[in-house]
Image (cartoon, rainbow, N blue to C red; front, side, top):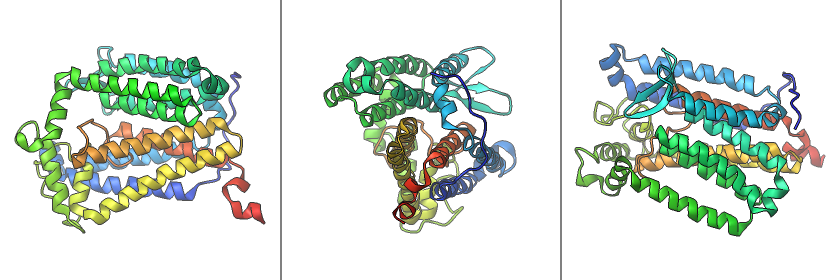
Length: 385
């Protein structure tokens, strides 16, 4: 593995379909964060625009990151895959250092930089996908032929997952596990081995879900939130009321009632419920279509990358696409009461600098994948002519 780094290149070809989709989701997220947080922001900070201004700043910073990452050759990321693993472990350990780590609601997931708190698990998910993609390129035949080739990166994941669970951040660990398993399957891991590992992973997830009292409480309240609508089931019942109130076209932007101190975390984990209440089924459908398109586009980039014999770009695109789709699916499912509460944000939309900035890194990487593909592969009409 070479350690040489390639310098920046500025002649960037842009996947305008993917870029436009991401930009629409981000701008809609800024608007909805402002709408969902006006009352809370005014009560806490004396200004209704506190969260709106911060989310707008995060969005501008994210756009800058997209431009920067879009110009970094993928070979740099591939060559630094082991550093990605080291950085991941260091970040997960730093949150336990007194003075650096920040504990919120019993979870120590953040590094405190004064004006800004950074949730390390968001970045770790990305770094681990870069590590896995590089590993797949270096051990492609071993992964397809030898069970040890599959078990090796999963053992690394176990170490990372243990640190995540100590924080605790159960949702991030589950998303990372599912994403890594998806990449290994698409890379050609033996079906029987994948099946065994999936069953084993599912059993571990079930055991972890029921081994902690707070996780078990989330599951029981999810199964029947109306049994205790003023305590354990309060958040979910308020979310369902918000979604049901939206009907076809919603109550109008800013017209939500549930955001007025009824629905906790209205601008973060439950932003989708406020969007459903204010924009209705039409707005919900648009958001789902945009996320679905992003996942399809990421898989399309992976397919093109395999055609162009660029396996690192292919595995990375597969992983990023699975991650975006899975996290959006889980967040929407939680809001609609079909999944237990996981504390996962809606990508590019929910309030929070960590999630927004990392997702912009994801978009930047996907745009870089498109840029490095031969034009004749991404534009079949030109190839035919």
